View 1 (cartoon, rainbow, N blue to C red):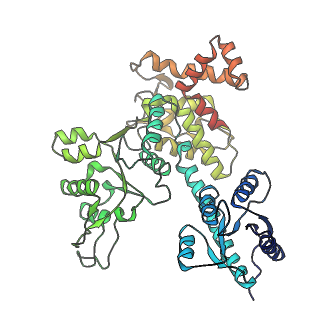
View 2 (cartoon, helix red, strand yellow):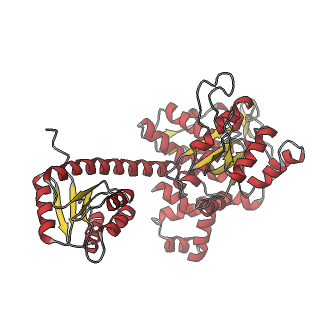
View 3 (cartoon, rainbow, N blue to C red):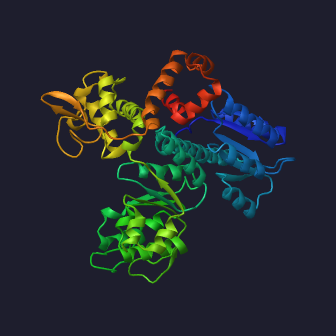
Length: 487
């Protein structure tokens, strides 16, 4: 005798009302909340109503007859797997065959029982179904967390160039098209690659990433394609490479510009043919992996100097996402800083409400040679060191407030420098007037929206512009994204 199984909500589906009620009664006696439906259509209606009712315990297990008029059990199984993926399904039939049982399991059924159902068999099948439901629920929760972490909502920015990149991510994600990202280190290429994967049909398969610049040339081939035992000194066992690990999913290769000419040739083949041989093996392996690459150096210049294969460049340069450095989209700094502060304050369990005006001004003036990654590190440090609920200048690093030397210190573009103990503005850097006016205009519209509780019509009236113009400006300035972040 084992422990009594966990109670769960169950829906029994059978066109025979006596059989349906009998099974539901047995499951109720077992401690479950059981109800029944007399057709597949009625079952789907009950499931939809149950899923939309606030506070009601969702159905965890469906017990369905196979042979029913109208929508049969097999079609119901397919619909439930698609529309209610957390529900585990048990199938019942009065004339079971091996073929129908195999088909039901292939379509996702936990078990296949023959009628009349023996109580002990149903009890055991319910235990398996409950375990399956728990696993499905945990997987759905994990998937939701991954989407929260790597979905579009975590890519923050309102700059017009970033808005175009968001559109490109949505456009390319459903396909298998190779994507090449360009941009300096720290601009968020890895995050973009993961967002592409999470928004693609491959989201349930592996996402594998590798920085080609971090692996010695002698080991890179083995890391990518694997090796067989004895292929070289130290190869004591077979090893699966990153491409095979990413089969069915996505592989992200960062710093592709650092790959040697020989490695570039091997990459060209696997990208074109989806085939490779592990090191030391003559066996050809086929793989289905979507390839996303990134470079922190202009590949066209490397091609011109003969340092990067032209044929590989043209093969991977199908869709290119050029990520701008943070210094070129400084209007995104307040939005990013606020996002990172909320993230790290939550992790630290601290109540930190924002930045002082002086601290935010210092962040806007800083040039961020380390880009978005550096900004996040600065904000995390400030969240740890700050003794007040508002981040002030005292919590920011010296280079940000302009009292240190070096490439990002005093005199660097957009910084302050100390002259005789007095802050002096750095030399003027020519800036298009449109770019310079972007942030003030954005702040004015934001303040007007907040004053009017985000009522667009009142805001447009106060600003003496029409509502359509306000909508266009909000979209251009990325204010809708800020509203979402604030919420």
